[in-house]
Image (cartoon, rainbow, N blue to C red; front, top):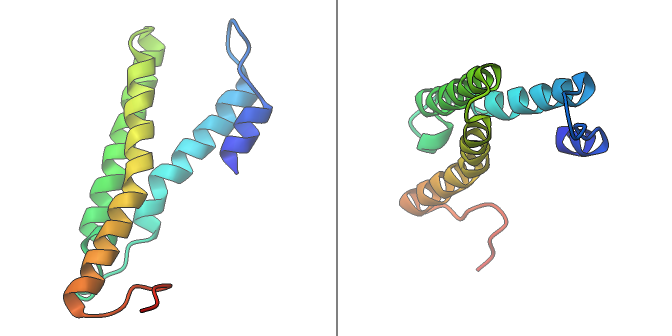
Length: 116
C-alpha cells in the first residue's frame, strides 16, 4: 500500500519532498518490521519465522536503512544503500516461504494449498 502512495506522490526532479519522503519512511519501516512481527516461538516453527532469525532479518534491514540515511545526509552512495535495503526486503519473503516448504517436507506435512 505504501508503494502505491509513494508512486502517487513522486519526488520532484530537484530537491526533496516531505510527503514523498514521509510515505517512503513508513513503507521502509513496515517492511523492516514485518519479520519481527511475524516471529513465532517453538521448535515446530520453520527457522525463518523463529524469533532469532526474524530479529536478525529486521536488524539487517534497520542497519541498511540507517546506512541509507547516513549516505543521504553525506550526499554519498544513497542509491546503493537504498538498493541493498530493497533487495533484503524483497528476498526475505522468499526465504520465509522456502523455510516453510522445507519444514513441511521434513515433517511430512503437505504445504498449505498443495493437493496431490
